[in-house]
Picture 1 (cartoon, rainbow, N blue to C red):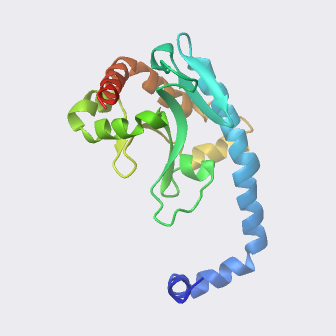
Picture 2: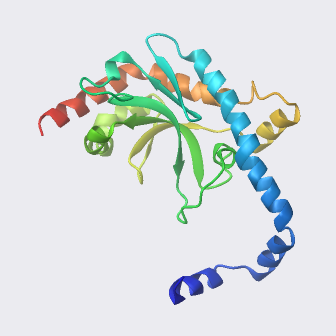
Length: 212
């Protein structure tokens, strides 16, 4: 750490808060690791079940290391092996300027500058063309009308997932997250319903890639 970094770290400290944190560090770390581990994993496992229930043919559900992904035959790659040219995925989009990592619970309750969502994903070879399309409001207007949101910083299209903190707390308190995690399923359902306009978006992106 150089002088500038040390100065920045010092200036950002609130002395009273620093003392309070140090005095409670044992409890803080225990709670954080519990939230990042067992609690977040329990929530995501319930979310996986909720999403899988609403995914029907021709859609295909894939679980990839706690990450639910949904693909369809029309979006699969014409060459090579992979998830597809485009797919839907539960992801985290962060607006944290300090690039801190946050728990899934903090993200889904929007208590930090980060949030969980169903994001429209593209394979690496199409990402530049996808971002160009996402910049074009005319091209993505039909997608936005279906409930998607554009993240300008990351040039991403997504359907937000939000569970109020108190509602999630009550779900854990009652040891029943089935109704609590329904926003995951509803967000994925909204994304699936947008397939016709997503098909057209992908068609334009594929066409742009072929001209290069």
